[in-house]
Image (cartoon, rainbow over all chains, first blue to last red; front, side, top):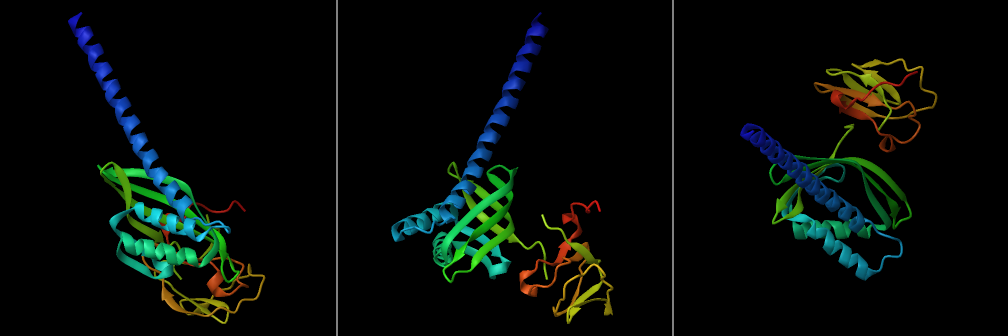
Length: 166
Length: 81
């Protein structure tokens, strides 16, 4: 009888452990996905955007990044480590080129190679209109690494993968 | 997802000269091309575990066409026709 009881308790403990692991890893994944959702929201720009909204959104973009973040965007010849302020500056200058801009992420896959690190692969679609009137519709493969710092997830590496190299 | 034709394999040299595709300096017969092309691209070597792909519609400026070298692991399948 004691053996049966011990076995049941062990089963219950194991079940709780498995449930807790799944619950917490899912909840971390949700947090990571939310960061990409915010990046999409704050990078996007409506035609009617006021200078105040623009300044707020640009500042908010900075809050998504770690104090130092690696960027590799071969198509725009960007490569290296950048501070949060430098990223804000890049984001501001980039958004200024557009009268309208939308950034969307598709096919997101999130993995946690180690504690406190999330790796995200996704397809990013950038659509919009440049100030000079030209329409933009670009699709890129994106690889990101986010680090968990004080309960928050921050982009620490972002790479636009060059799928085809001429 | 992109639909492209594999035109060169690893180790081969790829070049466009006046719209003609040259593999290892020899012009490739491409009966599937239906539009004129005037691309020029200096020779480049296809790296290990890579292939070189290009689309069949090459009547736009070269800069506007997605083509080039890509790792074999990125190939997802072939068209069913």
